[in-house]
Amino acid sequence: MSTAQSPTTPFCLVVDDEPRLRQVLVHLMKSDGFTCVEAGNGEDALALLQQHPITLMMSDLRMPKMDGLELLRQTRARWPDVAVVMITAVADVEVAVGCLAIGAMDYLTKPFHLEEVRARVAQAMENRRLVIENRGYQESLQEKVAVQARRLEELFMASIQSLAEVLELKDPYTRGHSVRVSNYSAVIARELGIDGEMLRQVELGGHVHDIGKIGVREEVLNKPGKLTDAEYEHIMTHPVVGWRILAPLLADTPVALNIVRSHHERFDGRGVPDRLEGAAIPLEARIVAAADAFDAMTSDRPYRPDGLSVAEALADIVRCAGTQFDPEVVAALVRAVEGGRLTVVRRPTMPYGMPVVERAGGQSAARRIS
Image (cartoon, rainbow, N blue to C red; front, side, top):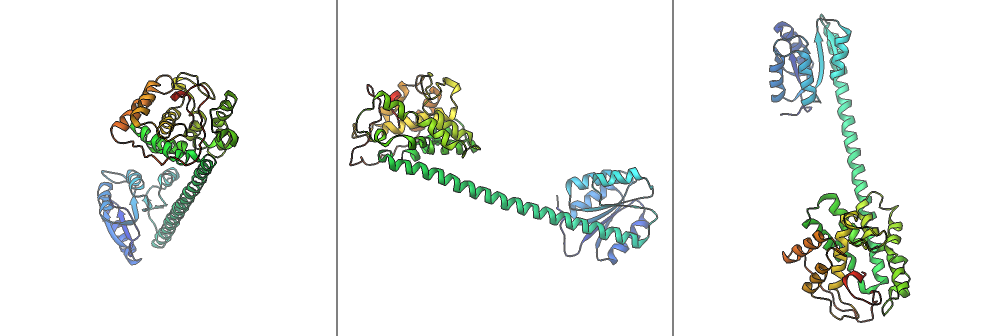
């Protein structure tokens, strides 16, 4: 299908089943600078529209094979930039209004004066020019707005992620934790068939999942020993604190917000802050919960000079499938690791004391906080 564009010499298609009238109009349009082609019915006219970059079409209403109204409908649908002037011997207001409603730019009745034709054609061509210019302006404006919106979103997301990185300076042991959790979460999500915008939000949510720790007292966050019950409860307020901080900023990214609030929920309903159970926990939060724990277990800790091996960490997570973690998410994590799609890059052990974030009395996966 060819698209009607404005060539150096505009093309005019004259459609009428009366050869003599076609000749008159063709002669007139050629004298006004048009290159002309002609057709005796609507079907032949459609073939010419496909072959030539028609700018203006002047068409009779009553013709054999395909009448002018059907030709007008198909022309507007397939070549919307063609200026169409309808011509008929019937001076019927309803017919004229119907043609204009379908998309004709003007309407002439027979017999007509040549100067009237010239005036109507000039008006139709000017309308066409304005429509095309306006569309180009709108498209350009929309593109500029879209580019600006993308840029603002990129800057905003960069600011949010920078905030997460600043938090890691407050807790130097977890340096790189948010990036690793984001990467691990994305791999698990892909394993579960998630892509597109939801995948993007899972990555963002993984990056900022611990942002609420900015509200945790440093003496608790950096405590070089096991946490008391009160300290544990204090540090576990970070999902809600983070959710409150980001809710007005990430209103358009609900998946990321769900992760921030619910990544410490447990599959058995014993998590925080809402004690959600099973499928009531958003899938994205179940994904990040597993990624979060996997990174915590495979990272170095002050009470454990070397992080667990990948096999040990997977075994611990598999043991907690159905209680702390979603079994389907755990299975996806295992598949990704065994298939080489998720690899662990260990960083050197930090040379100074780091916080122990297990609650007093246990070190199972269910009690690790990262």
